[in-house]
Image (cartoon, rainbow, N blue to C red; front, side, top):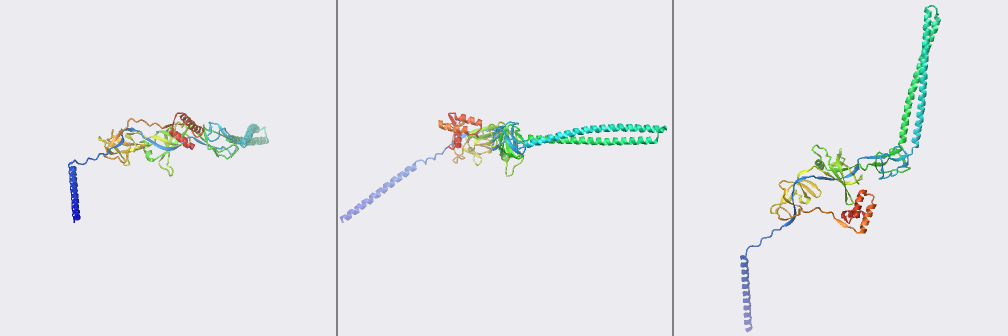
Length: 484
């Protein structure tokens, strides 16, 4: 009984303790709620600010540059063909691909034996014709003398007839004598007629001899021309290409043996789109004589030449589009026929345009400008040209406004930015490296042994390789060709 009573008392005390703890916890929770209710509202969220590179918009006059790619061609090219058929017995020194020749130089000679024989035969025929003409001329002179003698004899016979008739009238002569004189006079007239026919035959013989002589002279001139055609001469100073002949080879007439190219008369042919062509032509729908810059990239070195736009193709070839333009190269230093080059043509200037990096223009045709509170405002602009990594735009009311140079997905209208202004940044210098002696020696040996690099470009490259600091781009290009 005592144990049961003590157990009940312990259970009561435990329940009382738990109740007191619950009351105390409730009191503390209520006090905390009241304390939190008496404090002010929650702290406002802080606005996120992005950093962005900006620049001031400046509108002015810009000259767009049209960029295209084309091929260098020769404005004066001559196909060298065999002037006659026969065996090539002589070739000029340097008659090979890339060989330089001068105007009037004998390039090859074909065996002239047959042509010389024909020429000698024609000369002998000419002498025969000359002798025939001389003989016909002498026969003509004799025929004229015969006619003169016959006419004189006929006049004598006529005078004798007149005298016999006079004697007969006076009764001294006889009729038989008159008849005899008449027969003699008729015979003399017939002799004159015969001599005239002989004279006409002699004159015809002379005319035929003169015609034959002219023919023999023509034949001799033709034979001499054939003899001269056994040699092939250079028409102008140039270099040879596509050489396809050796000494001792039998060639046919008009067979191509090489091509002669004038290395100082070069042009570049390049194709542009129709839209670019429309922008390039003037108000009179004619192609302007705009300056052209031709650039050839050689192992990291830009070899440039100036030129002038000259003409355009008369028709569009099948399967092609756009327009094919031609530009004359004024000083083709180092350029060769067949080079694939980059062509830059200046278009007519554009007024009230601004040049920006291409990253500043979005695909929606808008740029991001800053207001007075450095918040972004999206403005639509007109895209006029794309110039490499830059764009030319036109817009109104944006003069001297600051524009974001590089758009990112995080930037948009209404966002506040921390502008980064770098107005004093200068041009980026090309990266250079320092070469160790072994590496420098390998590069110099490769450049000196390369026969495809023009001499002036090779001199510039060797000069740069001798410097302490060498352009890294040129070193990379050379080593990629070396296979290292």
